[in-house]
Image (cartoon, rainbow, N blue to C red; front, top):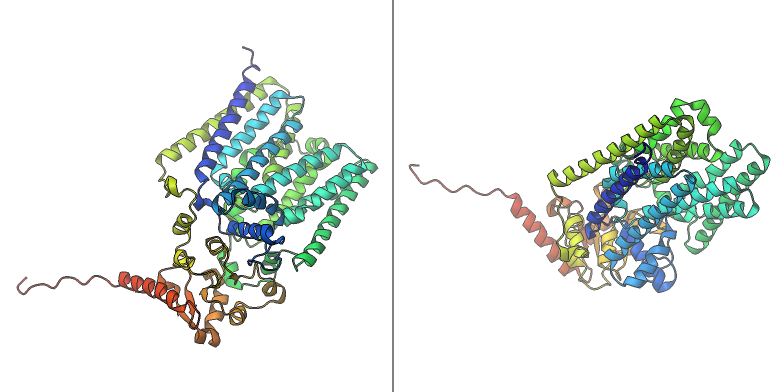
Length: 550
């Protein structure tokens, strides 16, 4: 057997081993408890879109721009129509389906980048397989979160392939296609506009031929035009030109407590993501650091543009964003296909600069050892690490089981509240689980992320409660301390509502019941019983009396 004949099979074995580790991790995540609370909002919007033709938050209500990714409804709504009222399966399958698409598109991108070099293709896939295995605990969560993360990854990977094709083929149809598809980032995930506008703009700067320069500049301007056009449509259709979360997070709607709660979280998430991508970063860094001048001369305008816009994107999420629900590197994940692209191109450069067989053998050996190390690490971790609480097979897709595991300390007695008639109105800052447990009930979002008047006109939560008079209020989450304090200090609220603080219920959020509400007696009985139970647990047991003489 020649030195080179064993390299490709070993690399492919490493690639498939890494993929197998990742697939096992994804399968472990496919539970009702894995769905994030915000994901239930996509299910509610999809239900209303199917029922009324507009993405609405309230049953039968007007359209609301509460989702930063309304385009994700193109996946969630068909699955909701196909599966019916099965919110857990709809949420899980939406993110899983998009995740599988993403891996398919990523594989296609690697194939295109390694045309004519089977061994480099195998090495690139091994590198991707290693990254999937190494990052599996975080990345697999997004395949079962119900959120739009994998949808954005699939879209963005296709955009990178399109940008790669357009960088090599200068024609009007390519320019307008890149601009139109890039502009859709506004509906997929607005922060991707950093790439879809910034990359062609920088390609125009780095291009050496005037036709390429003009084509890329036109693509950047057309991308921006398509994004602005969508903003105008949303302003007319959904009554806001921008997603409502933008107003909340940009203008400090919630006060300093929320920001203080997330101090350092963004940096930690960015650092964790970059650690997970260590292998891809190492290959790219090797090409740049070992031969910076060579790299600059050999790198295409697209490589340079992706690198610089990637730096801007990373800095934006590290220093300018409050990472609410930014778990498992959710906000940084679009950098994954960027790093795969840069690493694949860097392997091509390194293969040109170091053609000797000994270097290829060394790289193959290191990759194989790295994947083997990750495999052993994952197997050992599964064997000796304490197993997290898992649902019984019968409860794997049970919504109430998800509430018991994840939500009972947030929404006290919500399972029993959801059995009351649908005309009972609930107000809360954490809306996901109440939405799916009561799909026909009106839920008032005190955080304002789904209430246009609150965000656009800066209406406070206490004013909303005073105006809408909900039957039940789950007091704002501790991160919204200023909102909660303003609500409790409102004399009208104090007069009209019977309040159980969070501590009296042994919960994260307290509750308030409208005294004259039609379901006040039923609600009062629920929370009084919980408060009595909490008080009984707090009283220490009385020691047995000692008999005289002892």
